[in-house]
Length: 621
Image (cartoon, rainbow, N blue to C red; front, side, top):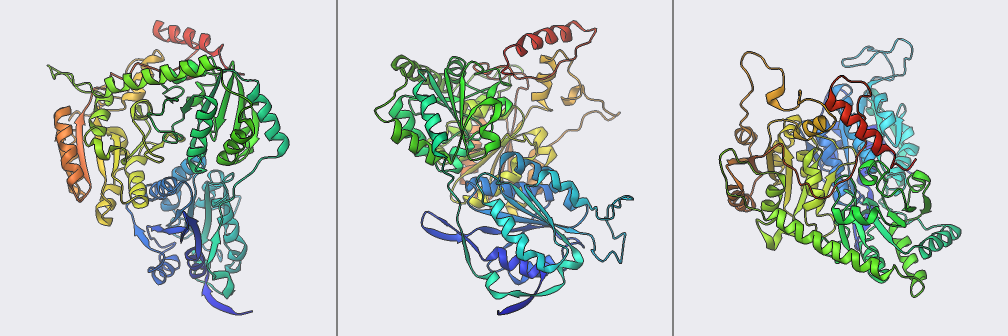
């Protein structure tokens, strides 16, 4: 057997660079490269290995470890989990900065390879700089905090462990059912140790993304459940996009007259203007989708993990039979649903073939769905094209900003990708953004992670450089994490960032009051301050200091003009607009369970508790 002597780090990078995936007939690297912030725990070992492989395995420098992991995750999501990136950090705060991003990837079932440095296996210099010491377990390091948020975790304490650890890691990263973050903790001394690896281990390898087919008895039971339905509704989740099942979804809906509604992750699988597209479902849902979901006799949930925003905390379609198509058995069997464990495209194609001429949704149900869907599209048009004349103290709200952004260039708007996460904007975008093509709506709402937006936008732009990537973000999220705006300038990956400044955490402020609370510690003007008072933050100047172009606009007309300038710009461009923290789109929505105190002297809290207890009676238990 022919061998080659390499350090563990060199072998790791060479193996990753050799992985290939086939997309639309083109063979591409599985990994687009590695984001890296170096420290004493990875600069000498992994850093040298990345340098040697820099021509075919690019290394990208970032400004925050969590941010660069978010960018890597967004890259994979934009590629529908078919391509991905690695992330390497040092052993201490760099490693623990990955925990939030790993949790985000875990919840959203998205692949990212995390390569944090680790403490010396030899223990000769213990405690090394940044080392976490445990007085009862000598094997613990900071990286153990990544165990519960990793789909696969391994600590490489001998160079030859890579021979088993790396194939396992790739199998998890590319498994439709188990997909998620993989952590390989890399002790800094072992990174530099050499081993005689088999040459064939580094041969180019084509990784195949498996298509999971269902057991015949499960498929038969699913067909029986569908045939018994008269008023079905499809809930389209992210699995539809990841499986490339948009055409199959459309065919099923049109063939059998079944209306479709969409989760945050599933939005864009069916175009916004399709006659059977009811729009968003759940807490942030359209009135059309929620009305039919609450009356359906069968909910066909395709590729969704049925989180509480989708189900209205299990109150929205509690009356319906639940049939879940999912590659993950854990998701397919939630809430006593009937599961069909299979790839979304395969399942929809098989159901369409076997039901053809044998079953149809009730005609009146289908026609009603068409009317409601058409009515909702007209409502969206009215909301997003609203141009209220500015008056004393008038500020636009999120829906008006969304309309101005999307209508700023109607010819290219269908090609834009909007990126967002957390707060009020996801609710407004879920209802109002008109997603015309698959992937045009990129929302991180599984983990609802503030701070994802700018970093995520960078990852999306790296995945789709030919598309205009528009990041919509509130002032609260922007202040949490914005440094990858500088990275976008450095890498020449242009973003358009629209920053809606409502001067605080407006979403939680409204929720606080809906639960009977007083406005407290959410908006800047109801927070504890020092003698100098509130800070006056100039977001435009801040963005300019990181190399982006930026401006503050006074109103919607100014935003429309600024969007034209931003589209023409060759570098990242940030637009700030002040918005109303109180107003939201009232159409649609449903109950969401947020616990209210059982004991309080305040009438507002008592009233909110009574409403809460009443609503809980509708839950599917």
